[in-house]
Amino acid sequence: MNQHDGAAALGRCGEEIAALWYAAEGFSILARRFRAARGEVDLVARRGPLLVFVEVKARRGDGWGSPAAAVDARKLRRLRLAARAWLAANPARDVAEFRFDVAAVRFAPGGDGLRLEVTAGVL
Image (cartoon, rainbow, N blue to C red; front, side, top):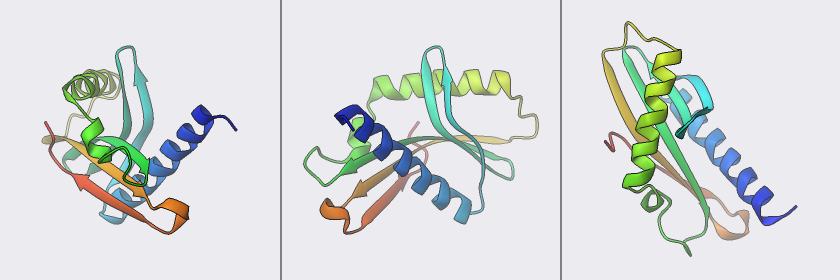
């Protein structure tokens, strides 16, 4: 497995952990890894009239800083564009509120645990 494959596997694992957390919080996962021409949404979740677009960042250890710190203004702009594309393809007529979250998953070195931090309403 090369470095890219390892990073992709880490990202998928982080997305699964975030999806499980949202499900435990009463959300339904409507989409995973939705790609649009100018962006991507890792998860689209819904609970009642609330629709949440989630950017998931996963890291091993603390060497590269907080996973959430990697979500800069450029990434948020691309997330908004992808969210618009998802909404165009999936009209949500009874949604009253939209939110953008960052779910940061940090895996401890050696596989000794993980920490999930969800920052709600980053936009």
